[in-house]
Structure formats: C-alpha cells, structure tokens
Length: 333
Image 1 (cartoon, helix red, strand yellow):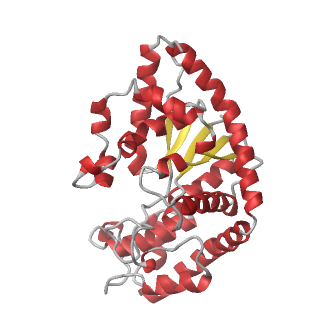
Image 2 (cartoon, rainbow, N blue to C red; image 1 turned 90 degrees about the vertical axis):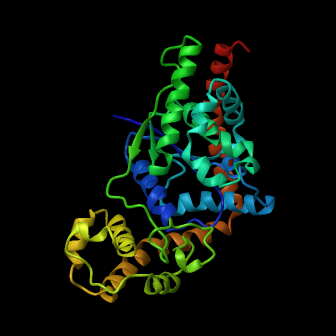
Image 3 (spheres, rainbow, N blue to C red; image 1 turned 120 degrees about the vertical axis):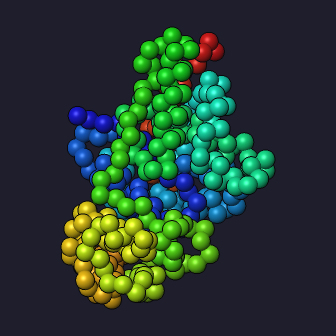
C-alpha cells in the first residue's frame, strides 16, 4: 500500500550521526520504497524558534539539503523543499492555533525541556512549535510520519488538532489523521563522552559526536577516544542496563548493521573494546565517509542546491496551496 510521508529536519548546522541514524537513514529507505510519496522538508521556520544568525541560517539550509541528497534521497523521486518558501505552512499554523487548546500545549514535555527553568523568557514560537508541526503534516494529507520517542507526543497532538478541526467545521475526515512510523532496530544515539546524554551539536566537545562532514581520520580518532568502561563486552542484553556507554556504542553498531542488539552482543561478547572499536570505526567510515565527501562536493555548487530547493518548494506549494484554500473556505474566509 502506498504511503504519503512527511518529515523535516531543522537547518541548525553540523548534522551528526544521531541525525543520520535517527532520521535521515530512515528517509532514504522510505524514498527507495516503490510506491511512497515523500516530502522531506528543511524546516527553517522551526529553526528560528531559537535565535539564528541570518548568514549562518542560509548556509545551514543548503547544508541540510546537501545532506539529504548525499545520504541518498533522490530529488527526482521525493520532494525536498524549504518550509519558509511555502506560505501555506504559516497560514495553516495560525488557523490551527485558533482551534488548539492551551492545555494541550502545556502538556508538551519538549517545550519544558527546551525552555528550561525560566520559561517566561522562552519565545511564543517555541511554545507553539507543535502547532506549526501539525500544519506541516496536515497540509499534504500525510498518511505516515517517521517519529522518534521525542516526537511521539507532537504527533498525538497533531491528530488531536486535526480531529478537533474536522469536528468544529463539520468536515469529517477532511484533515487526515497521520500514523507514526517507528523505526525498527534503532537505538537512541547518545554522546560518545557520556552515555546518559543525547548526541548533540550543542555539546562543546566535538569528540562527543561524529559529524556527517567528518573524514575517516576524524571518525577513527573519535571512536578510539569514545568513553567505555573497564569490563569486557557482556553476553546478556540485561547486563547493558548499568553500562550506558557500552550500550550506546553497541546501539550505534547495531543501527548501522540493521541488526538487533542481541546479535551484536553475540558477535562481540567477551571480547575487548579495542577489537570492537576497530570494527565500529570500519563500518562508520564505510557508511559516513562517502556521505561526508558528497556533502562537501555539493556545498561547492550553491546554484544546484538552490535549484533543488526552489523546484521542490514549487511542487510542495502547488499541493499545499490547494489544501489551504479548502481550509479557508471551511473556516469562512
């Protein structure tokens, strides 16, 4: 059965292994499935919920598009586009925010995490971000959305907003309720320096992450220096519960090999970390170095990247503008 798939990546620069294994690798597989219609969006409107340097943002938008293409997403098969170039996203977000409940948004745990202790100083954009995300998804009659654990709550909210809009305007099934696509054989990717912290571009230590623009020497060096513990690799899955760094490295290996953790444990149990890290470096270099080289090559051709984004945005706009017209008509505009 064919699926309509929507997903987005924020152009905040320095995309890393966590972004690749958590999202982009999955996008490539979805792009390659025969009957899927995929929309992969560079969500720059979401990016400005925190302050961005304009020149840096422009550079990061191109880098995100380059990463999509370098990773294997075919712009002839899937629509790669820039969110801010399709005005229907902003229009739909406002209309949907008028049917959304403050109580719903108050329950969003991601806002609480990102806003920190002083949420009074956070922007309204950061607070209402999930409504814009709902607009992104609902404009394309999306059937499926690839989500990680941190976005499940937002997709549930999207479904609630769609249902309420349909009820409020007596338009059953007008806004389609999307289903989540949960990635199989995937472990959340944590910092190479601290197995309890998510891998992040904001970590001051570059050794905490593998960037998608790293070369083979940088990848090898980071895995050599990745934090482990003094014990050998365990023989049982349960033994990983108190060993976050070991669990993280085995999770990365398993995700790259598309196999479950148990299989990886069977492969390496009782062996020392130097042997395991050598194998992990090899597969990381095999998967990431070609992407890194292609990203650098594509970034030299800004005109090509801008053309891909422009053409993709025109295709997306054609679809989204029809939907927003129907939404306005239902509302009474």
